[in-house]
Amino acid sequence: MKILVVGNGGREHAMAWKIAQSSYVKQVFVAPGNGGTAVEPKVSNVNIPPIALEQLVDFAQEKKIDCTIIGPEAPLVAGIVDKFRAKGLACFGPDKNAAKIEGSKIFAKSFLERHGIKTASGRAFSDLNAAKKFALRQAYPLVIKADGLAAGKGVVVVPTFSLAKRVLEDFMVQQTLGEAGRSVVIEEYLEGEEVSFIGVVDGEHILPLASARDHKKRDDGERGPNTGGMGAYSPVPGFSPALEQEVLEKVMTRAVQGMQEEGTPFRGFLYAGLMVDKHKVPKVLEFNCRLGDPETQPILMRLRSDWLAVILAALEGRLHKINIEWRKETALGVVVAASGYPESYPTGDVIEGLPERLSEKVKVFHAGTRYEGGQWFTTGGRVLCVTALGDSLGEAHNNAYQALEPIQWKHRYFRRDIGIRGKGEGISGKC
Ligand code: AMP
Ligand code: GLY
Image (tube, rainbow, N blue to C red; front, side):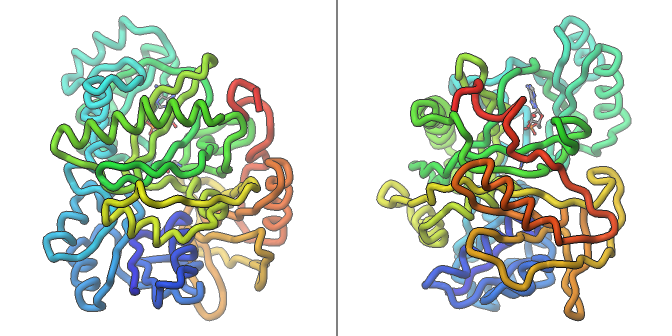
């Protein structure tokens, strides 16, 4: 089979790497890919951006691609799956209507309420004065979310009303996020521990993936600005089978049935960002209509089964008939970034020390890299995700940091505490 993966991050490198291992697969194309997918066996890059929907459809038709898998949210929300289907091409991901679960925070909030799924209480506003009046009466900290897609910049936790006012003015009037911030959701701040729970969904059935946790803050000790994710691990200690069952029943099943009932069945990866409180009650912070990055990297490191077979089963509506197997070990990925990320950062640095050969227990997934003339260069904020397996979280941590150390470039930056036990690790401290 010939497979096309759309995207250029670590998540797409991990998918392409895993899919290339499938015995069904002759070739994997990645559009546009990165310096890692450029050199992966059986994988080649195609110079088409993820949002160039028509060009991607044309490429898939011309190359007779058997199945296309979409990584990032932007093309999904723009309706890429609808365009592929209209031409009779197999494409895995939610269609435009179902992708609204991520594309509109206002839709997601009212959907959660309609289907009795626990979430932070919140209200939607498109009028600045009404939003300010509401914010004045709330307890702080408070959370303000831009309605539309904002590349990780659309959620702000504000400690005071005067800051809330400023963010509302920036989003709704100055339109610092463009159209995405013209309407907002203002919601209650939830405390607890965050877990990413991702299911593969075929419209009706859910195949849960292993639990994962990502570290969203840029700096050690959960400080600094929010990022796309600075590291992740799987499984999450303390994410018990009972808690998994609760999430499956009270969050995932309700969401999948709700989408079906509303005439917009969800097919694709459904990612619930959860806050688990001290009573172990999970509440939904957000839904994403795709896999998480960097969660995918440790999750796929642990997967023993054929990843393409899972996706094909989902496309054919038979997820309830398959089982997947996981390695028992923990996998942990450390994102190595360019200093200055997520604001401005230099690019074009030469990356030295990338290992030629790695053990089966370590994999360097690329994100913001380019391969040219036998060398790798940095091209983005999140550059690599060095991922390792270990018999415990601590061992996976040590293995990942040991593998990372020789890999150098001028403006290298990474957190040193990914997966370290302490605040934010484990659920309610019980592992
Ligand atoms: P989201 O894109 O909605 O997941 O928000 C990004 C990050 O903001 C989340 O991963 C949380 O760390 C934080 N966040 C979002 N909503 C809330 C909330 N209601 N309470 C506390 N933190 C939140
Ligand atoms: N790691 C968070 C996300 O992919 O949204």
